[in-house]
Image (cartoon, rainbow, N blue to C red):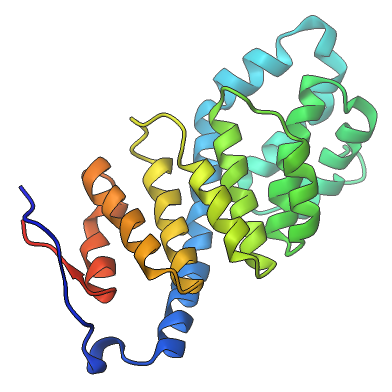
Length: 234
């Protein structure tokens, strides 16, 4: 059982220069962005059979839209062809084509998500937000993944306050989710550090430690807390 946390100043040798500290956090964040996209793709693949096909493809009146989005889904799952996800390959349209032709259908709705993430991964955060805002994934894991992607888009736009807001939304799903919730809490913590809100960052890291002790993020969370001057003993 953890004893009461105590605050101690960070030594000059380990974390003395504020500018360098934020730079290191930014580097870590950029490195971890690759992981968050990996998480998105992994979850998409896992739930596609339940969420995508049952809700979007099996409905008879959605047959054309479902056929149109089939290749987009495959490209998206590969995580290597975001331009194809957006624009297709010349023979088969991408997400933008599905949105244009079938925007009012469930498949068109899912295409908004695909397009948003694809734009984010191709360095167009404004376009990403535009499409992710139009996506309605209420009651599904996709909604929280969309929030997380919006957080990354706002961070790319140098708006850490909005990034933190959406990372927290992304971590507000099922409390038993030991996978995406702690990940996005950590992203919110790192964005808070970038904003100079170290107390908020500490609270977010402590939330990971207390609520998700078995998560991947909890394994090294003590290092983040120690860096900010908060030490705990187990």
